[in-house]
Image (cartoon, rainbow, N blue to C red; front, side):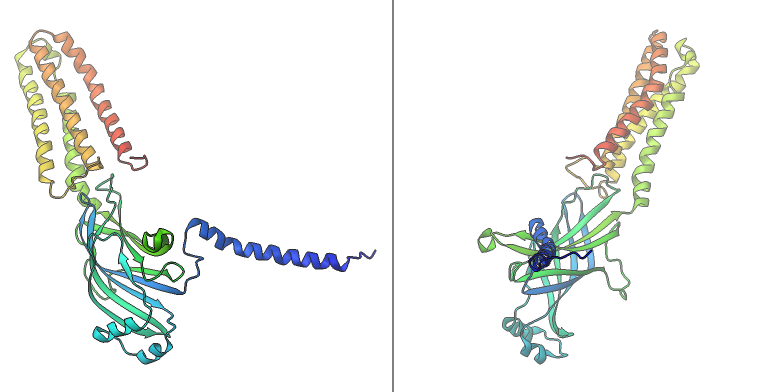
Length: 372
């Protein structure tokens, strides 16, 4: 059986098919505009950037800033063909560079999260594969959101934001290439202090600016260098001393407190009681001494971090056990032996459970999973 389709029907079907294809092809750019990303923005100049960190130092969690020595290479296809051919294989710098940059379009930026203007050491301009390549090395003081509630554990995001201002997103767009930590042939520690690089990321985005009437968006290039504190140092300086204090305090409470012999007022129980009270008091005084000794290494944050929580936990545990020892001692030798025995039995369960509950609360508050 032959099926006949009118010519008008075939033409309508073809036009609909092309219409659907054109609509689906235009959807990504529409979504990109809605999300505010720069991936689908057509700019007059696409500037591909590679960043390298020579040094990262003076990381201050308490104040929320760090310093960095940075190199950046910006590559774009210039329309000034005469300059492309004139530069050739030369590397332009100094006064010649200033004259060249005045004659051609070139990317300009500020460091958005800098505490003061960056200090540029030098710039060079060259031509690589028919494209302009502008190199700059600079030092900069940067502010960051240094909220590290799990300190000394967890990661700290040392980010750097480059904001383009030589044109909006229709004029200039950053294209992230890669981020490097130090040169391969330079054997030195890039991140100074007790920190290690855990991950890196280079991304581009767009943001509104008060420039141009506050209606237009500009391209931003953001680098992320996530660093982590050396965990072995944290264990040696914080976890091991504090856990030792807590364990010793619980041992004193379990085995050196009042006992049945002491309840009868026999003199051989007195040394054990003195050791219990004296030991708890010594541990109580050790905690602030340890915190003072680590003051230079511990950040004084405005929020509760894990190290602060552990000191609070140790203080609570030792304080409770010290109070238990003093009360048991007092009641035993004042003739309230039965009360002291009951209180002692209760404390042997209460004290560890209180410590576990306090530890759970501290871990919950410093986990970073809840809003603050």
